[in-house]
Length: 352
Image 1 (cartoon, one colour):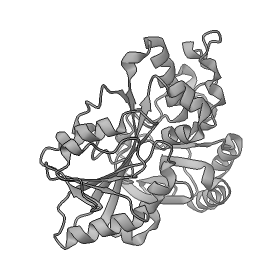
Image 2 (cartoon, rainbow, N blue to C red):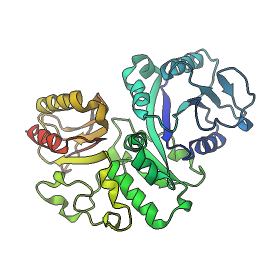
Image 3 (cartoon, helix red, strand yellow):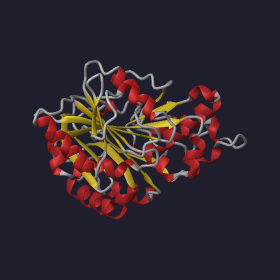
Image 4 (cartoon, rainbow, N blue to C red):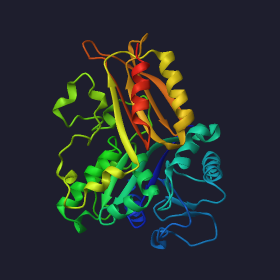
C-alpha cells in the first residue's frame, strides 16, 4: 500500500491552527483527510462540520474527512488509523496532526523516523508552523517552545498581519528568518491558504531537490564570496533596519534558536565527516532541531543529500552533479545555542 503522507501542524496558542484546519477540510478537493487532534487543543474543530458528537474516538465528518483525538499516544493512534485503513473500515488519504499550542514538535517528528512500524505506513511530509503576528514578539521572547516551533518548521504561515504595522511585520519576518532560514514565510489571512501550500511540501524528502527550500541559503551580502564565506552568519554584520537600536526590535539577537550555514567547494572526506557528525549528534542532538544539506563528497559523482532531526540523521544519494555545475557543499544547522565555532571548525577539518 502506498505510504500515507502526514503533516504536522504546530503553532502558537491562538495563531489560527483550527481556522486553517477548517479551511483545509472545507476545501478538501475530494481528498479525504484524517485529522489527529490533541484533545486539549484550544478549541476543538467545531461540531458544525462534524456529523455527530459521539463518544467514539474517531468521528466522521460530512465531507468524508475523519477527526480523532489522541488516545494513549500518537504512535498507537497512528497504528490504529493505518490498520483500519488497511481493513477498509476507514477511508482517508492523508493525516494532519495538530499539536497543542505549547508542544515541542520534536518528539512528534521523531515518531515517524524512529518507529519502523509507523515508517511502514506513513511518510512525514512537513512541519508547518503558524505564527500570530500580533503576539509573536512576546511569545518568542517568553517561550522556548515557540522558538522551537519556528526552528522545526518547513513552512511558516504568519497570521493576523493586518493587526500589526508594516515595520513590525518586517522585523518579525527578519527575526524568523534568522532563526530558520530554510522555511519560506507566508502571511495568511483567516486561514485562507490554498491546499497546495499546505500539502505535499516534501520537507523531509531527502531525494528532493533543494528547491524545496526556495531561499535555501540565499546570500544577502556582497562579501559572500570571500574564502571564509561560510563563517558569515545572517545578521552578524547586517545593517538591516530591525537591528538598529531605538525601536525595540534589536533584542532578537538573544534568541537561543539560531541557524548557521556552512559551505565549501572542497569535497568532504566521507569517513571523517561521518565521525565528526556522529560525535556532534551524540553530544548536542537534543539541541539540534533541524539540519540539512547537499554535499560534495569525495568518491561519488552524485550529490549527497542529508538531513536530521535531533539525534536522527539520514543521508541519501541524490542526482548526479550536472556537466559544468559547480560542486559545492551547502549545509544549514538550526538549533538551540549550538557551538558554531566547534561545528564550523570540525566541518572544515572533515574536508579532503
